[in-house]
Length: 171
Image (cartoon, rainbow, N blue to C red; front, top):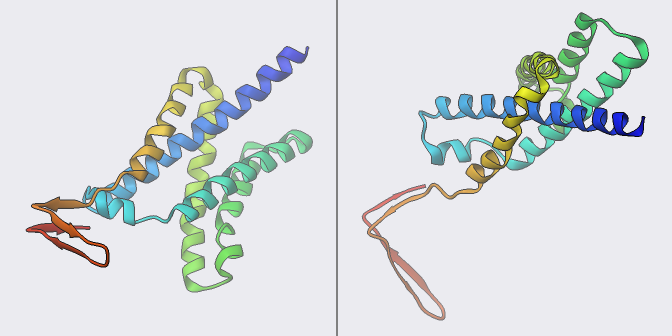
């Protein structure tokens, strides 16, 4: 009995991580295409604390809504509404109510619905899709690379100064 419960918990965690990885892939493809596939601009287009906040928030919201769904036997549409509302209010604790927060909330609600449907798909095909989790470290690694372009870079360092000469610098 205990083994079944452990497998169930592991399956639940893997489903959440698979869904999160899939959503991060979609968001990164959107960000890359919005900056014309310029890797330097892509890296600068997000702040790591915002990503971290969104990841933690999404996982906590999914766990809470799943908990309510089990206890109250919520319908699929009620769960989708909870995800949408949770997505919409995601940025209010950070910025209060403003014009930006409203539009960020609408975008976050859209992302929350995508997360919800991805999660339902992953739950259905879970073991076949768990390989997607292997891409999570790749995403993290790509976001830590310095994509600054330097050509003919010559630097001189002394005890009190630094000078650099170059023909091309982007970033």
